[in-house]
Length: 250
Ligand code: NAP
Image 1 (cartoon, rainbow, N blue to C red):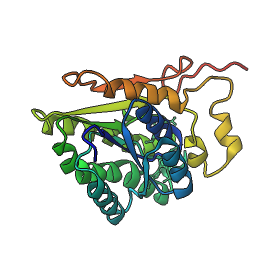
Image 2: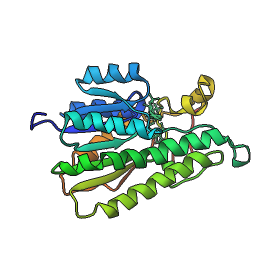
Image 3: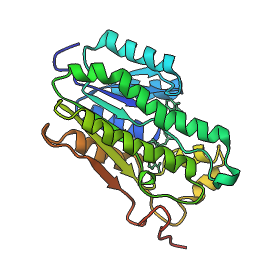
Image 4: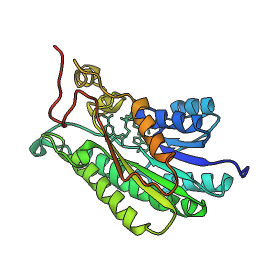
């Protein structure tokens, strides 16, 4: 690895906020290493950015280990880890909740983030300075009916971020949580299992954030001077005041 290479790893970089963040980091001079399950999409993004795409399923410990091994084989250290892979599944009240949806959200958003972070920490510790950015959500401190599995998982992300900041105190590793409101990505399409009409209705009559808007915030936190830690950054569309209060033009 050339001494000048600064490695940024982005999980869930095959679409949405992760893809936009990969673009922003590559534009700022980072060499990007991208992970996700959909290899065609991932390789197209990595190829375009002169970065590297590697298969990654954050629900699978073996996949995480292989991902980290492949990075370590090529690069001595990692400077930035963007823990972005995540999803919402379903919008039913607890009484009708799907066990499969809950397991998928907990395994991806909570266990996946914990396990990827643990696996990458030795590589982050080798860098003279490093930064971990977790994708939380306004659902990490607000709740809404039907969101119990997702809000519980993002509340957990907030607890993990805050715990990690305590545990890494004194080391040159910054820990940031980004907490977006409504962002139009594939998020709602995934939540409603491919129902494009239902997904489109989420953003009807209002202008949501784009993945690029959130990537811009992430890049700002990463490019602050090394002694400056942005603990949390909450970003919403101007039309959204809370998860439940959204101004729509009819
Ligand atoms: P998205 O377009 O659906 O992107 C999600 C990404 O996560 C995809 O690249 C997907 O890639 C990846 N992913 C999902 N499961 C994975 C797994 N098991 N292993 C590896 N990668 C996995 O949605 P997004 O809005 O950009 O979401 C990104 C993050 O932002 C999530 O953590 C989400 O909770 C958070 N967020 C989103 C919003 C919003 O309104 N959109 C608001 C607040 C927070 P593959 O399917 O190819 O694996």
